[in-house]
Image 1 (cartoon, protein in one colour):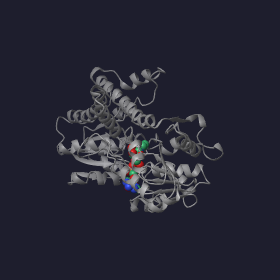
Image 2 (tube, rainbow, N blue to C red):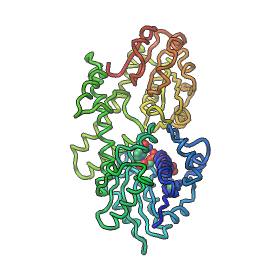
Image 3 (cartoon, helix red, strand yellow):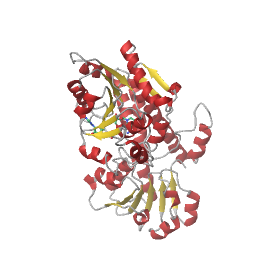
Image 4 (cartoon, rainbow, N blue to C red):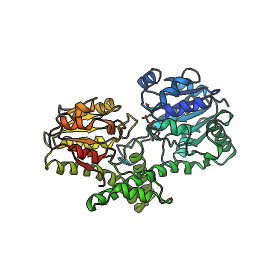
Length: 454
Ligand SMILES: NC(=O)c1ccc[n+]([C@@H]2O[C@H](COP(=O)([O-])OP(=O)(O)OC[C@H]3O[C@@H](n4cnc5c(N)ncnc54)[C@H](O)[C@@H]3O)[C@@H](O)[C@H]2O)c1
């Protein structure tokens, strides 16, 4: 078995993960392949297809040395005995399980390609997030090959966008699930060696956790569901704070001081976004339904319902603050990315809110340091002249009735808010849906302010 690695899927997961694997394993060659030529060309250019702090530096260090991006999927499968699969697994939008189940067509196509082109035994590693027991289906497809042996492992990725490189370089844990037989154990050891890095320079062995395949597959869904549930719980409490005069910042700070609760992921805001949380919770709902666990399905479904409610509530509160009519008023939306330090806009709360405001006939000026190209694609169907995409936040706020802060980019608190106030229509409102600005200072300038959970 050779030590070369190929990853199928050059997206938010495949690109950064393989760049760091290549950096930490200089004597292994690592190929990242994709059917999307434009994406591969971008990975080979100075303008990488995704923005992630620190990514440019790592890619520059290893690209062309032991990291290669190519569309030659067949050639790479032939020459590598370790195949990671990081293709997309979006929510299925048709047929059985529509709106909840994962769409596994990209995964299955990849498995069939591996079976078709392989000329030696392979370890196939699930990097994508998949429903529990997918590895069984994959093994069934792969092992239709007459003479070759394929061992399917699950190695879900826990990195968070915006901190991907930091998370990859020093992860809380790495999880590898494999079969209990001898071949399974040998395959798990091979993947443990990759994460330990050459001369044990990377992940400490005690942080590399091994389980059976089904536990590994389910753990990824479970971890995302628990994180999403925390966001929805704190947002549910934020609504009660707004109604009672309690302050969610204070409530969260004191709750989080309890070591059983912990302080992370207790920030109220516009709800979770990104490609994973909603998709993975929906997938968990579908799995619960499939196994007849109705109450468990209802419970997890409520995490999504709460998230949607939080976004509707932002629009309702803005509506009331603007004297119950938004039609023709200009609203400057600060931030379209689903969180700071990424250009990713998949399932962004800002997108949902923008659509609701557009239905109210608002005029919208959307600004974001990294996400405007994606905003242009996402909003193409409603770009009717009432929505502008503006690089400069000062320009976006000019003549606006309200600024709505939807992403906590660190640039925003540092803006000259007196200047912004002077250029807006009065009374000027700032709705800080991330609680990232100094509200007291804004009020001193003359703004009316709204926050989440206060
Ligand atoms: N984005 C995240 O932060 C994150 C975090 C953890 C896990 N994940 C999981 O990782 C997986 C990938 O997510 P992503 O955000 O990187 O998706 P992505 O859409 O950015 O990338 C997936 C890539 O796979 C390619 N692809 C699809 N079918 C292919 C095929 N048959 N052959 C070759 N390439 C193919 C697509 O062209 C695309 O470039 C998903 O299952 C996701 O849930 C994502």
